[in-house]
Image (tube, rainbow, N blue to C red; front, side):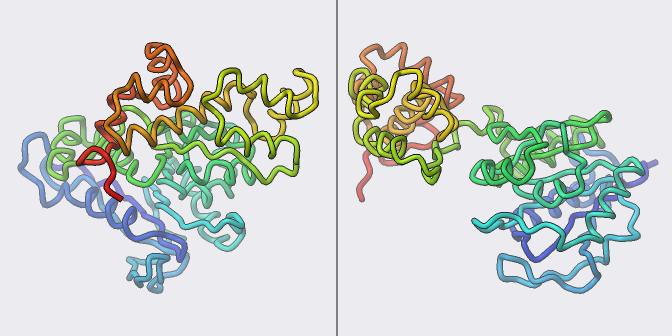
Length: 337
């Protein structure tokens, strides 16, 4: 006999994007029509509904209007998922969905699992449920999110984070990390064999190397420190020179210790770490756009020892230079444009 279905509520609000929302909906619902495939349980495992603050159709940020199954308040869901949200540069404006926020808290108190996909964490963070626990969020939003919700310990380099005393607070990172989220939920509720079967059926991609390879180094520049900003601008074109930190100290007119403190306060990185990350970012562009040997790429960004460069690259990017090129390099080698 089939076990009772797990009731899943996917939150739909005007800031939501269609791709993540519909992908999660289709994959979780697929267990019903994939019934009989190897590893899948008999009968549906998930009952998935699209829920809003009210029952009316919702015009999504993607430009389509989505019909809903009903209003979230009053629904007794076992799993709540907030999908990707489009958040403008001014930040997330809290307090616009008080009924949804209260409902999420109520469901958590009743034992439900609360999940965010990508930037869905912004809405959930309003509730305080993630305060003091680890989470992940789409990396371009990480700085903005950290400024708005400093009590949440975000790790944008991680594809999936399971937190909470019961493992009931789950977050997935950038965009298609929702693959990791749904496969985790399927594995937990229906078993690992079911997760493998669904993974194969949809060709879903687990981000086994994390999200560090996808993150672009984008340090703050609007920090108001003109001396540090001038050094950053100089470094953009001179990161490969010998002893760039020493050169920046000289240009700043400050003591080495004073410059280091001031630089880290403005950028969030010690000077040497900043240089290393900038060099790795420049190496990524060469790996993506050229077929230059790794040794030549290392030399071009400031490293005479290819082995040291490979170790540094793997520490920052999460994968080796060769792996990075295979994943992100132009299919034809050197860029044509």
